[in-house]
Length: 297
Image (cartoon, helix red, strand yellow):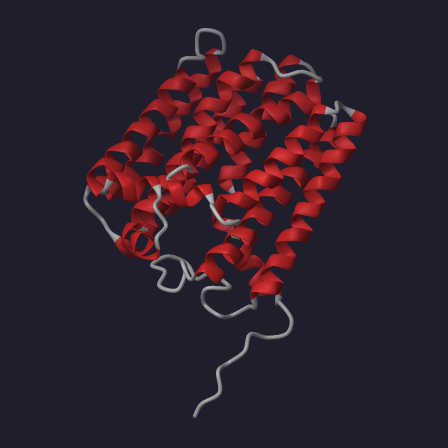
């Protein structure tokens, strides 16, 4: 009888890189630079606060990625993945090691949040607690809301409203209306990324009992949802043009939307949708960068 291969005792730098999911980082970059651009246009940027904000956002995002890897892995959801390998589901790293990394990242987020709370405003404590609980219960706990079709709502709230408004608010001491308005396109495009991911995983998620919004809607309506989200994201950014004319720069990001839209609407499935995911990440990066420039001018 062949002995079962045990995960290595120590997690490697490569494991940390894979678990952090660097290809999805445009979904953190876009709202961050949007918030900083708003702060620049309405006041000034304190770079120490900006560094703490980056630590806060990265601690939350990377921590949530590792906790998601842990929770999905121990549930068996990632046993038959179509997309990139997951550390626990593949058996490469033990669940305890992955969870430990996630908790360390959350500790970084909490430390940055507490420093910002003490130096800027105590409302950052509420934001920190909300993010920590929201990240964990996405796939963790006995009743994860990500398994009930609420993932897109969470992404819009965290990557849109919170990331943009908190980044601007930390700099300015208050949240301006512009941050609320700008959080809409930023949050929507990040939702588009999750929609593509869940479209790819409809069959495996349904089999594992993970009832995402894509599983509920089915393929045709999920493809239509992706198209609608991308369209509304551009429209909501252009709606700011009367007050911020340079936001028209986002039109230059339209070519980046063509490839992922074509892939999604062509009926691509499974691994064929990985290119759509990558294209959506590139779209988020281009859109977020141009949008931030337009807001900062």
